[in-house]
Image 1 (cartoon, rainbow, N blue to C red):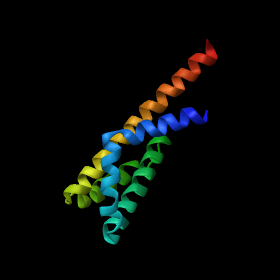
Image 2: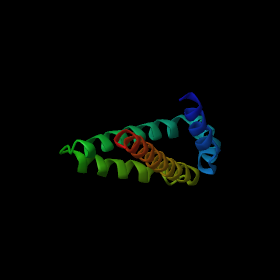
Image 3: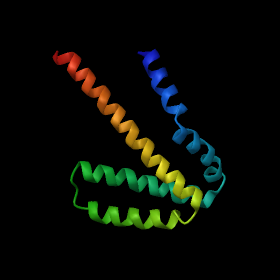
Image 4: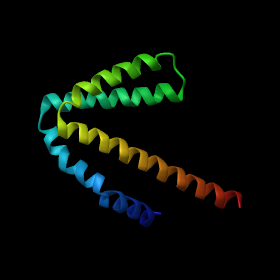
Length: 110
C-alpha cells in the first residue's frame, strides 16, 4: 500500500501544474495580506462544497460571496494563475480518486 501511495504522490508532484503551484506559493506565503485573503477564499470554497453536498439553504449566498472574494484576488496575475492551477489539480485528484474507487468496487464485486 505504501508503494502505491508513494507512486501517486510522486506522480502528482511531477505534474507541471503542481510544480508551478510550488513556485508560486512563496510569493503568496510571503505576503501577509494576500495569504489572509487566500485563506479566507479557500475556507469559503470548503464551506461552499459542504453546502452543495448537503444541499444547504445558504449555498447561493456562499457562492456569491466566494465569487466576490475570488474576483478581488484575481487582479494579481500570479494569483489568478495559482487559483486556476489549484482548481485544475483538485479536479485531477477527484478524477483519480474516482478511478481508484471504481477499480476497488470492481475488484470487490467481481
